[in-house]
Length: 361
Image (cartoon, rainbow, N blue to C red; front, side):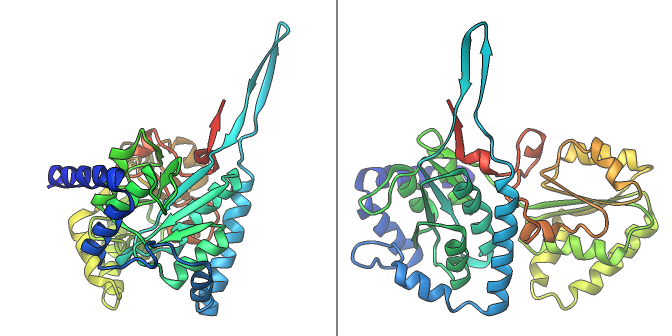
């Protein structure tokens, strides 16, 4: 199946490269049943702002607070240029921003305005002149997030044709230097195939959380954090590693109770059934060894001495220390980035950040 997708995506990429907007319009009509306005899929600024003004006040307030926190964190991790003088010779490392970045924002059930903030804000903090967002059907919340984050232009485009338009440029979509953001298998294949023409962030896989807990942890909170990850999609990974069989049983009971009235119950149950696990280990040291081998996207430490354990946790995209540090808080409001390496890539890869939109000379 993957090979079939790759082949079809290759055809779309080649077609968009040759026929540009004509090909983009053809594929968008075929796959998304959407017509252009005056030959373009760009969302007019007035339409964009009017839609974002319709967002309910509680959601607006949450997005505004998240914007402030994400910007504050990323403004503190900019890489400055340096110079070194050796025997009268000056060696200088100059750091400059990319000129233009493209953001892919998924549609469907995976619409997360927070992902707009997490990708656009680091780009703008880095000094990227123009940020272009593509999304197959922009919700008011997504458009508000784009407005708050400083996105410059929005196009209602999705799939491989959107990635191709960003990578090669068309009459209406400008070519970018880097494409970031998650998508489905078609988007992932397109990003992989255009790499080299442009830079990309990563090929995002299913989301993951691994929780290390001892017998002092709260089973209700652990279950809630496992479900928070499992409800993302059916392929999400949610794993508990504990020194206590009693805790594992209590968490299992809590999962059943909390799933009962969950709006996304079917998705969460499928993920937990297929990709969930409770692993009983002899010690917290063994739990850390397991986590380092797993290299999870998100690692929670709900155990005694959690802060001290962090020094040994070497392969996680993000670490949440203590019972009050939930993965959901990091995903949406804490201020760190939630675009993290998945599928074991945390062994060698880093979270998305300001550095991803800078180049060194």
